[in-house]
Image 1 (cartoon, rainbow, N blue to C red):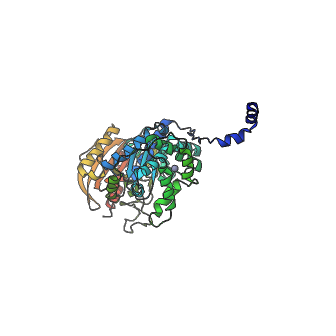
Image 2: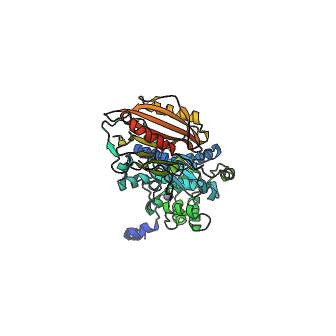
Image 3: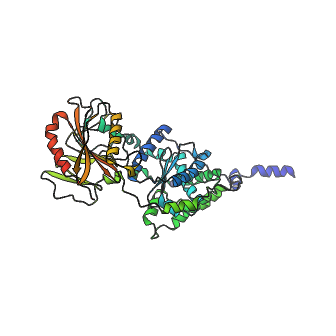
Length: 467
Ligand SMILES: [Zn+2]
């Protein structure tokens, strides 16, 4: 009898047998040609870009709470030991995203849409899983765009001149401290396979951290169900675009949960209700520098500009410039350059150096945009420039009126990396604005200043602010 059973067992086809024993799905960390260090460097660059365009909410209670949840998830084995950090951005669309290497941003709209701490933890765990499983890094290296990510896209053809010795002058350094990529490239859409893996890895991460993992797919499906309702069409479209539906999330996460060790899920800061109340009091976002220097949509410019000049109507100011010059950003979200032919050169390290022409941007003081003060912030800005440029000499600032605002005008001298005629004169105008210290650097090689001086004076006279 027993012998008979044994024979029977042996002849059961393997495939039929294995169907009866469920196996836990495997989740893979993607292979990528980016090193962990490169991932983190990219993440840092993207983060700079994000924070120039979106307002980070500096509220100690919310920051502490988000990081408490996030760091609890970050120490699980599923988080793959990246240096995660968590910031709240002032945007009422429902979204959250993590950048390669670990910076993570949660929209105010997401916290407003969540009904429990576990739902927020679920979104963090899912987004962190994209980082841990190296999804962005794999996608970037697959698209072969990463070679260009470390470079600067370049102004309109013809304005760039090759840099002789690869050195980087003052204005070049300002640019490098700036940003890199447009948002479109950051908010990448992942494949269904990646989404599925991020769900499973995220659910396992939640379980390891003591959160009920089923809240992850439940929240995602809740958001999917409300798609198209009048309440949040824009936000949900954004969320759905970066998180395509992958079939029943609840179903496949439930299947996965069968394999988790039995435990009761007790993780909670106990602060969710209090934090929701604080989030509801955050005032609407102030426009950020990255937006303010972009050209205003559908604006045709002022008709009152001097003859021979064109207008650049930006969201935060207007300036006119000679019509033979070009205006544009060397990189999405970066500083505005207004230059004649050959006015900027490109350094070997990827930076753009202003040789002749104007560069306009905002400097956000270390203590935040709200602390902007004309004298103190100008001094902080100049001190920073001086640290990065040993050739830089500054003269005493003068108070002048620019576009009905009180400005400081500071004459600087430095050297550019152009071998012939490296001495450069810069007139720096600074004005305190709600979003930071607005500045225009009007710069030229010393030998060209007799031509440039009257142009700069004329340009400065056309600067206007909308208020
Ligand atoms: Zn996702």
